Length: 157
Image (cartoon, rainbow, N blue to C red; front, side, top):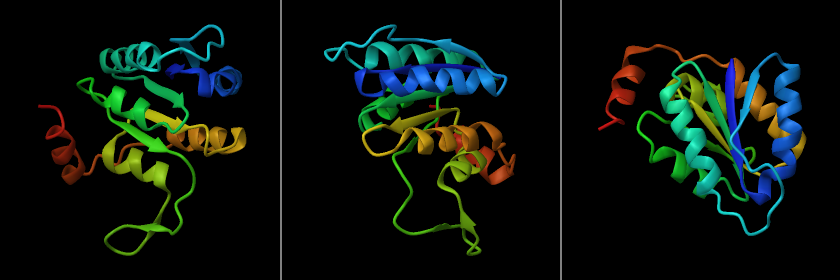
């Protein structure tokens, strides 16, 4: 799978490590920057190109990183066709569906929302947690449930 990746200074070190991890998993990685650490960079300069690429390349996914991941997700979600889910650590309690089944936060975002971009809050998670989040994000398929398809169609207006 083609993976677009981008960050700001807060996620730069992890981005570089994640690229190797993704390549080892057999993915094609397109790095949208930055190419060097700059504490004064601005996340939209790197996140928007990731979101635009994913929007145009329907079979791809995006991984974006930042301090909290919040601004990065907001930036990405402004691009039509992008559905960025945010991860900054395990929730304080289990998430359940309507029937009471326990759900993994990232798997749920893929299965129910067909998230095509994962935003990671690097000031809240370790590199190992980031790798596990990315693995789940890439391995989980969308459910194709009609109710989820209906809801997703309402997002792009």
